[in-house]
Length: 440
Image 1 (cartoon, rainbow, N blue to C red):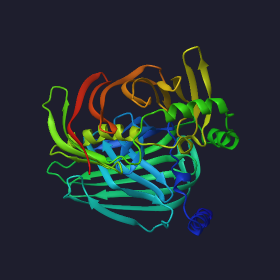
Image 2 (cartoon, helix red, strand yellow; image 1 turned 90 degrees about the horizontal axis):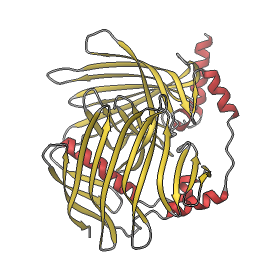
Image 3 (cartoon, rainbow, N blue to C red; image 1 turned 60 degrees about the horizontal axis):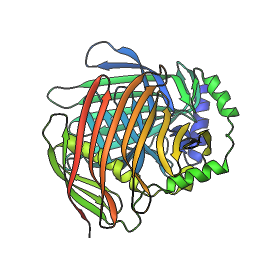
Image 4 (cartoon, rainbow, N blue to C red; image 1 turned 180 degrees about the horizontal axis):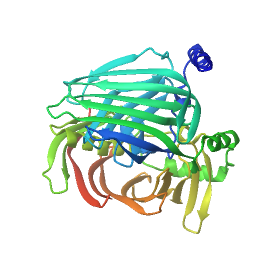
């Protein structure tokens, strides 16, 4: 009876006011969650492993920058929060070697949803033919038990997708201020060779703001006593100058079209056409779905960095201070919910190195830039090295060499060569743009 009364009270409380998805699904770069991950693929008995998911970087899609929630096995999902709720923009599954992009994004949890009332939508798949059906529904839970402990004030959100090839269902157990403290996944394909997978994951370790929590009591104490770091006005002014010295396109940018070729390792080059609109929407025409997705991902990085983003919008709530300083360089430390412990090495207005910690990994990005005719900078070489925060060992490396050229009024990307090393394997990829023309 006590449980029933609590459930009724919580349901009335949530229904009486608009739901705040950001309170139950906070997105903070660097936060990580480690789960006891029990899974079953096909008929064999279930197995249990440790699986960590962390917000590690962003990706640019047609609706803007979104946050990447990645697992160490290669799975990831792309999320965003806005004034109306939590949205899913895409996902990738390692076991089935598939990648989804949702345009427009699909609602997972919105402020206007009511407990027990499904929110439904449908849209065409990437091929423009197959129809996908989506549904999301939530209910209120007084508490949820995990290996880390019992979390109070929770939501259970079930999101499903069905198309002509498969049925997916993901259930998130969300705790206020913590995020996904548990989740369940079911996948059933409709092919001639059916594939079935189920997952039951429950939180064992949480990492927030560079701190590790093994018990719910520890996190509750941290959340109640957390204080902001002091601000340094001189460091903020210097960092602002470096930010505003990065080359971006202005409001008159017309967009452009191009033909492209993409090759990976020793494979043959695949060709296609692309378009970047004046609103920075990316459109790819290519018969090869894998190349289409890869080209979109690479081009999205070019486009994302060329968009002007006001400094005060990005860093209004950040604490910005000095790190190491010498005669040639100055280190700037930036800490907030989206850039915990980020470090930027500057030489005057130029960014030479970016370092960030993302829960289970940290990376160091050595940057080389070309200087444009108006004395701004475009990063055209980057070497990212990833390290494990648990062991300190090297876990991967990515190198980019990009070519830009000024065509008429604007500097445009024309070429990228990429080298990757991860999990003992090396790979190379090349993207080349030709016949680049501005839109009229």
